[in-house]
Each structure stands twice: as C-alpha cells, then as structure tokens.
Length: 466
Image (tube, rainbow, N blue to C red; front, side, top):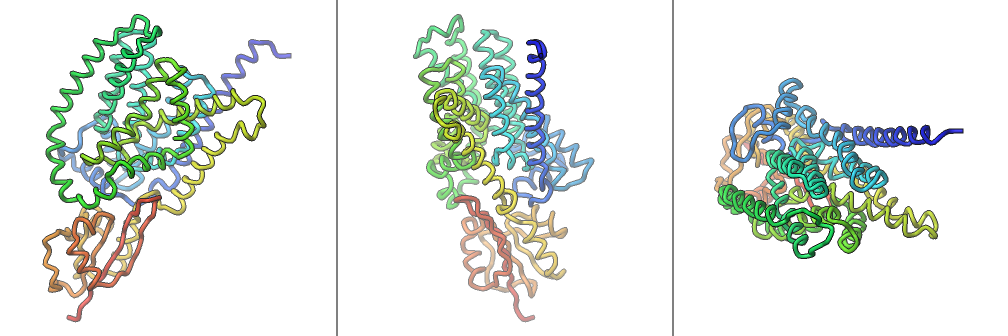
C-alpha cells in the first residue's frame, strides 16, 4: 500500500507528464508545414530587413530579432528559417504559461489553459509567421502575471520586473502599449471599489506613474501617428471595409474562438463580482485590448493582430469558467459537465484543420501564383506586382512595381505582360485593375477565404501580337 509521501511524489510526476505531452502537441502543430506556407508581404519585408541590417523606423531591435537574423544567416533565407524563432518561442510559451497560471489559479486551470494555448489556431498562426507576436505575447503575459504577483506581495522589485518585461514586449511590437491603459483601468477600479483586500498597497503613486508614462509614450508615438496619414490615404478604401468596430470585434471572437469568448466573458463577469484583485486584472487584460482596438480602429490603422496580446487571458478565463461549471454541476450528467470544455476543443480542432488543409495557413498562396509565372513567363515578359520584394524572392528575377498613375494604354515594352492582384490591389490601384479586368486574361486564381476575410491572389496575362 502506498503511503502519502509516495502519492505526493506521483502527482507532480503526472503533472509534468501532462505538461510535456501538451508541449509535444504544441511542437507538432507549430512545425507542421512550417516552411510550406507562402511568405506574406509583412514577412518578406521583415526577412529582407533582417538580412540587410538596414535601419528602418518601423522596426526596432529586440532579442528575438537578433535570434531570427542568426537563424536566417545559418539556415539561409527560407520560410522555415525565418519562422523558426517565432515557432520555438510559441512552443516554449506552453510550459512557461503553465507555471504562472498554476501559481495563481491552480493546476487544473493551468493544465487546461496550456492545452487551449497549444491548440489555439491564432497562436499557431503567429508561431508560423516571421513576425514577433509570439515573443510579444509571452513577455506581455509575464508582465501582467508579475504585476499580479507584485500586488499580492506589495513588493516594488516585482512590479519593477513587470515593467521591465513590458519594456521588452514593446521592443517586439508596439501594440504592447495596451499594458498601460489595462493597468490604469485596474488601478482606478481598485481606488473606486475601496476594497478591504487592498491591504497596504498604495494605489495613487502607481496611478500617477502610469499616467506620466502614458503621456510620455503618447508624445514619443506621435511621429508614428503622423506618418500613418500616407498609409491611410493609400489603403483608405480597404480600411473602410475592415477597420471598423464590428469587423475588429468579430475578428477577435473568431480567432480566439466563439465558445472560448462566451465562456471566458461569463467567467469575467463572475470574477468581477466574486473574485480577488488578481481576477479583476485578469478580466481587464482580456477584455480591454479588444475594446480599445475595436474602437480605435475607426480612427487609426489597427488590425486583428493588435488584439493578440489578450489571447492568454481569454484562455485563462475560459479555463476558470470550465472549472466553475464542473464544480457547480456535480449532480448533472458527466457529458453536460464536460460539454463546454469539449465544445471549445472541438472548435479549435476544426479551425486547425481548416488552417492546415484548406486555408493555406490563413494567408494568400503567393508561392503558387509566382511559380506559375516562373514556368510560363519568358525572359522578355514584363511582370507588374504590388510588392516587388515578394515577387523577386519567388521569381528570382526583377519585377516592376504597380502604381496608381501607370499608363494603361496597352503600349507596353513587351508583347506579354503579367499582373498580380492581391487583397489590397483593387483599392490601391482602382484604375489599373479596371483596365486589367477588361483587357487581360485571368490565368490563375489562388484566393484563400478565411471567415469574412478574402486573401486575394490572382494572375492576369496581357498578350498582343508583335
């Protein structure tokens, strides 16, 4: 018969095995077809920048960018090499998030959160994208977790460490700025509630500090807002369709998962009434980024990816909700008690299947379009594209940039002229593509439909007698 010491030793071992198994699942999902998906325009710009070490105001240096540059240097400028670091960080995020969530909400919530993160299609997508959103998410989540720990222990060094991690998250992506309003809203709530659980924690100094930081960062960020006017002018029609509150709010629900959002939001309301300060901050960290991006998208260029920082907190909320349902339905049938958990996992599995086998990794199939041109274009053919870096990477030859003021008289230097259309082309070059559709032959369609988003990739050929 086993004694209590033996049982205590077995339980951590099983816990470790469970986390290891979930991490292996995460690794399989993130390395599956890692180098198969086409580069996106953002990815190719990032890779070219990392290769050439050219200073760009839109990109700052960070630890993961140095690692990504090293991977490209050693493995070559391939899709796999460019995405290796984001994928690795995405895998390592699973056990790291488990450790912190277990500390605050227990092992069952931590295990389920880890499983949801491992199978999250949104997290898989950014793990397979040569950008740095997985590192931002990990650093940002740890900053929030450490801030929670600092509130509990009332230790300045812990909160200072949280601010340091937040600073590192900012070097990955500027959307980590949402940390400031998240913490500010939480501090205001703490002051207003006058909760007896606040203990000796002094809220006002931190609220003043965060207000000053927010003002300074707003001033520093003004050049980005000013420079965005040209971008908005160029992409205006496209932004009118996709940069509105309804689209951005629905985008978050789709990528996080509708059942996850429903259960998570219900758990957030429950925690706001019955939870501790850490639970209030958790709910704020999940909901506020989605609200701010959805509202701010009507005034400034913001996309679904800027809501990605909320993912871990939605998953923790959903896990807390699943646990609460399980504990409060002891007399119900087991299938009913497990229904929310199974539904969340089923939706994730279905979306992962679509992502991997139908939706081309949720991106346009540029590789197939350019491969067709490579096989059929002659050396003298002209090729007009919306992004020359992407075209030249796949074609291995120069391509010409589309522009709105092109002479569309049909008097080209070559007898055969190719045109590539992506999801932005019709909005950026309306006159060009009106002529293209009326005077050329559509030869390739590699469009990818992802929910309400259509990733257009089409090839047109103009041919005249010479």
